[in-house]
Image (cartoon, rainbow, N blue to C red; front, side, top):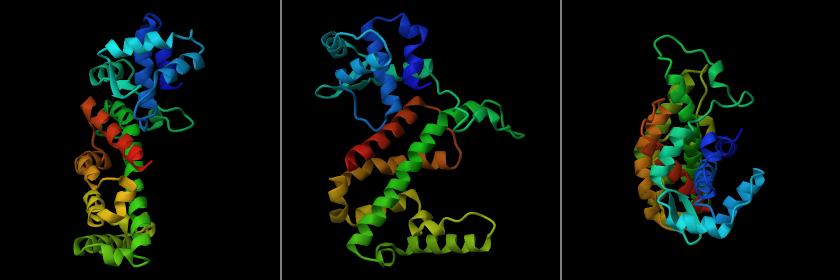
Length: 259
């Protein structure tokens, strides 16, 4: 069952008026499609229809959104759930365990010295891990595409600095000595670098990356994103709802900027 369906069948939703229901669906759609910058009233109305619910009056929903503190207008005709409302909804509808055909969290035995509550931490972190996984690999793909086109086959030798070359050489050597373990080197040198190195490479060639990201200053926010990435990549846990929302926004903005 999708999050939208969960929301639409919950008692809180069924007892609410149409305006409140529209707010709840707006939040659920935003969580399910983090790459979108917001949703039009027409999309909310269509969501009601797809759920086989009574079709609300779009003019009334639009007026309700205009007055509601639970809705934030991000561009003319486009809205998202306001932060406080999003936090309240996230508390009402925590992540479910993933379905059996994808990955059943409950099927993984908890080893010694790991408290049982870490299972719920894992359930919350799965989506965030996926967003950061795709975001970082998108950066790598963009860098390789741009620099190989600009410099040629020797782009790595030309573009990387001494520190980057050393990381790549050291990690390649370590992987060669541990033949039983999976390697990163086979995917290319960018997989041996840290998050901050990827940002550095893009900033080094602003004229080449601007056609893709429009403004090189757009990368500033991704300096901060690296701190969250390191927590997640090292199997840490985010506790603050704002942190999950911040990563969702980083991910959505990257997709939007490159589209």
